[in-house]
Image (cartoon, rainbow, N blue to C red; front, side, top):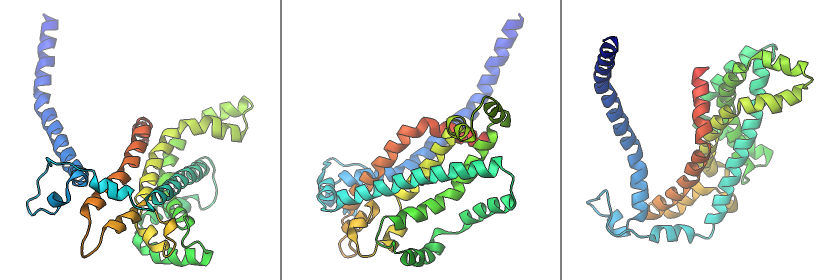
Length: 289
């Protein structure tokens, strides 16, 4: 009799929660559709013939898909060079920012020193400054360093802008590692360097992956710095600059723009798929902390 009552109560609770859960799932589907629609339209436009793209009555489908836009993109003489430059910049930013942020987060978490709180506040303040406000000062800095028209003029600013967020996020992961674990490692004869790279580093790796995703996307999609710091040497341009080849004020090639944008999106999706498991655990750990 008691089991029968409990089963009815459980069934009633499931029934009462179901409308709310259904509404939440429907809302999530609507939001996902709205967010993914621009991506769908970009890919669709990349496969549309030129006549359909310029049609006054656009349709969310095409009955005559074509690869002409992609042929124009890959037919560009410097497209491969742009792609390689973007890979070099993004990979360098991800590796350098992750390495520096890991050491800095460990320092501000494990060590006590003067002005530590001030330093952390400065990290927050640095994130509040718009990138556009610092573009002109950074231009003069790169000019004085002799790094204009080089990939270093893109790598260094992106490392600087990605570090505050990465340090703040990794600080929570480092803080979540018990100090007793560090003391036990020292008692077993482990040096500080060994503890840092063989024990602490694997534990905060999900956080490093999470911050690396944001660093990669920021560096890969950068157009402002590439346009401002790469002035005359076209061989040092990155992939976003390839969009300008197809955009002309009097006669823009929207098919080429959308095809180039689709090609740009593929590496980001591949990178996200490769790290998605660690990314989810990293974000979950960050929220928990």
